[in-house]
Image (cartoon, rainbow, N blue to C red; front, side, top):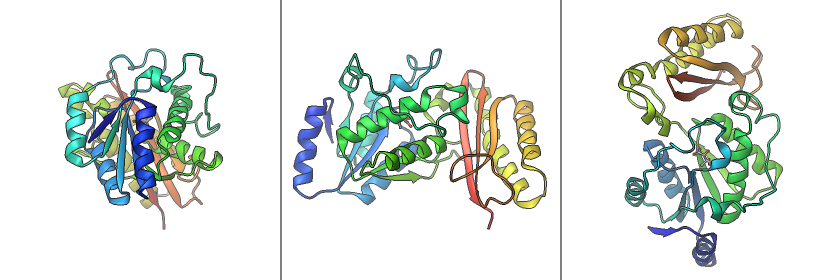
Length: 281
Ligand code: PAF
């Protein structure tokens, strides 16, 4: 696996691959790689000739008081995992390589960025959209792969790609879960042993809400409220629990068929998110 940290080196390598007619898959990450990331790399391997992975802890998507400084940086382990999984190139730029000190351009996908996680993390999705747009311009991949665990992030990126005519196929890859059901996340490493026992309740709450939607006539607002109460009783501080239309993440009504239940909850200092998408027919 080749390692590059400058856009110049990256473009030199990619130029060679493209002129040889090779297709390129791209997996953007913030490092601290777990089985969920490695599944993205494996899917990328199956769908393109060459796989580029980036590791960049993007300061622009962290709010004041969030964990940018303490976000786990595990370069050696990440490098080894990527080699074993068959990535061809690791792009690991510095902040100054990615952002000009007087940068003036921000990409914002309005509406979609302001709901759910966007309400409690203002500016977060503009940080994500801006860096992903820049990374797409640097790598110019044929396809890019993202986990569906970050369902709202994926929706923001797909909309950005459509609206800005970016010639990249965006592929969502299913969430990888621990045996307990807990969605894999770099932030799971922040959980104490006691919190690790509680954390799977988030997925259980999603499964129970899905069953209630499918098998009862309860109003969606009652199902959401019951889930918020169950999460609080389990020891979480729920941020939101919302039964939504999968297409645009707006509140679902009983006539909608394609649904996603989106949830975020704090457990101690750790903010966890998860979701469950399903169709009613
Ligand atoms: O999902 C992530 O790890 C990040 O939000 C991403 C897409 C790499 C952008 O920094």
